[in-house]
Length: 244
Image (cartoon, rainbow, N blue to C red; front, side, top):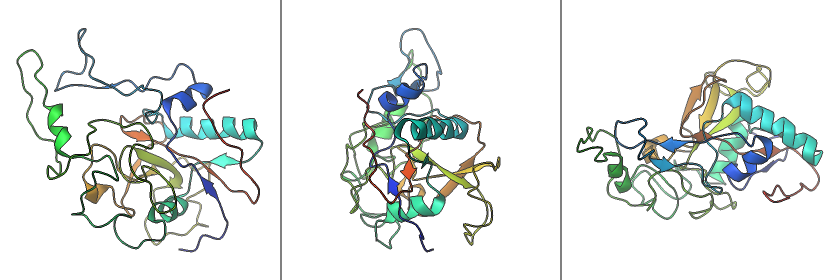
């Protein structure tokens, strides 16, 4: 692939506090404990801290956020295409993960399915659900659910959490390879299933690879899917901060 036009990409995934500027009512909710979805005395692990990446936003909502921010800063903000996202994730590297291979200790670099996933098998009223979540128990990144953005080392281009933490929406409709940027897959009006990239805290390294892709309908809100933004611009981009 050739990236024909320069672009800026968010250093971090969009956070709860940033998204709240657009939609104060949004709720990233909790990751439930054990097999009990809700109970009155323990809702689970909080996903709503200010600097945690926003989750449970649909592709349509992420695209609406981009339109809102475009109006705020006077430049065209969008979700990255698949090609832009992978180019930024690889940061000039050619392996499956910018920091190494599938057996490299990711503890300093990414929030993935590690030893801490064992905590999902939580004692709920003396009942333990089955311990079925796949994980790489050789490593411990010290986070169970989503980590605050920037908690791990950045890739060589200064971008954080490109592997793990949360999956990220792209602009692209899920279509077979070879990738063709001019075949309509990146048209914002296409209503087909949209590609997510990067993996999450719930995924092992093989699903967090630079090239790995999944897809969801544009309306679906997923517990471990968020997004980051891009601006295609030849000029300076205003800093997107959470303060007024």
